[in-house]
Image (cartoon, rainbow, N blue to C red):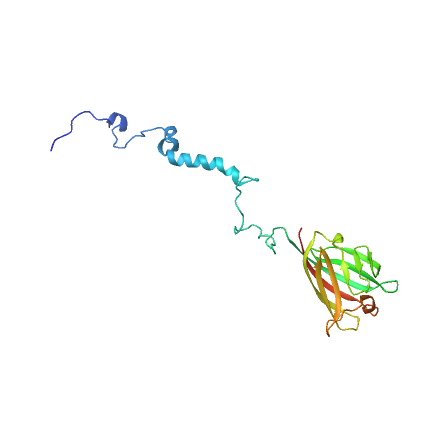
Length: 211
């Protein structure tokens, strides 16, 4: 086997000048940078630093918070459109001061609206934010008195002191909340002004608005 000859470049004077058997520092700390010794990682870090601004403060590709710990849950979607709001109210209906009229009040139970007592709601007329049909059988809470446009609603009769067995039906029409009372037999609708002459009705109304 041949033997390599020549001076070579691993000189003791460079790597062990004091002859203690320990290799000396070959480069200064300033020379030991990623840009020199790991250029791929350095390039990736540079790209990440530049790109991070696009993930915050309205950047072009903000990171979704869905599923992350400690962030709010997704908004109520209902029909798949973000921004829907769920609201709950107490709806009081009582006999008005004048003959054949109603007195109504809407009070927030949770996240709902407030329409103060409105007296003498007459048939075939709009009084404040309430409209009563000509027969007194359909009572409307006008959308103008509510937050946002009502998209859906449902109601529960929780107190009936009228001494007449009735059911309450609630629905939405063009953003208004409509309500009528009917007897348990055959769904015959009742004149509300007659129904509450003896005492009050209390209905919980739950509704979803577009904002």
